Length: 341
Image 1 (tube, rainbow, N blue to C red):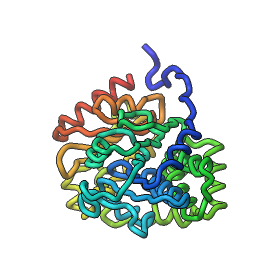
Image 2: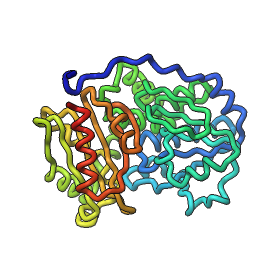
Image 3: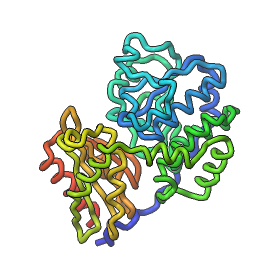
Image 4: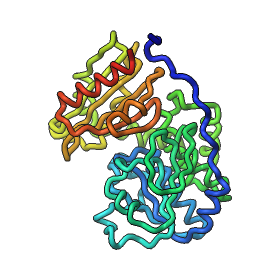
């Protein structure tokens, strides 16, 4: 039996992105519709908003339509409300005109919500720009680099190949994408190149201390109370190597917290010494539980999530289960235990 939680055998590196092809496709388009995944994080929002600004800098039209409302704690990234909510700000049958549809930071049908119907039905050219391992066939040309620490890195590379200027606005959006998807530069995905890019973005106008305050020192009392509830019920398994917790709709109601307030709570559990993997189950308003996995060992979170129809990265991934809490928790923990033995 192999030693628990050891890295799997090395695989061949992914092929580099065909940037000349990407540039040709972008330059040939006139009107762009951009979208990203449900329950957006700052990489999704920052990358999408930055890509829209780059496209507009090239003299083209760019609209953003998604199947979500921007979480209140992230609304500072979109002060002009560029991101339109499908079905409210933009009807499916009255979308802004577009001849290119670009999906950023995902290529999973389950993460696109009602935007999936738009993607399936459009005759426009479709592109995906993403850094996740897990993927579905969206009928698009895919530009993926799983070695990138954030999709924001790929948007920066896109700007460079397109000859777009790195304005303070674009630099700010890309810094937020890069910093948050690396856990503010503490995850194993952080490299010397990450810091070099962060430095370039800072020189171009990003203000790291102000962005940190906006992101991490602007919590509501409701979010703090929600974190307290989740931390109070933390449990461990496998001699402390696995840590897990859960959040219910009753918790949100009791704290006056928003669904987006559960973002990043799982990362707090890894502060416990000796933990190698973490799981959190978060009840959804429509029923069922969103499952998040984190690993700081050889455990492949993406492969785990794929067992439940989800996906992501080796160190961080997610899925959804429609089951009630006891059954969902049992299924997920059994799968994690098996993977960590």
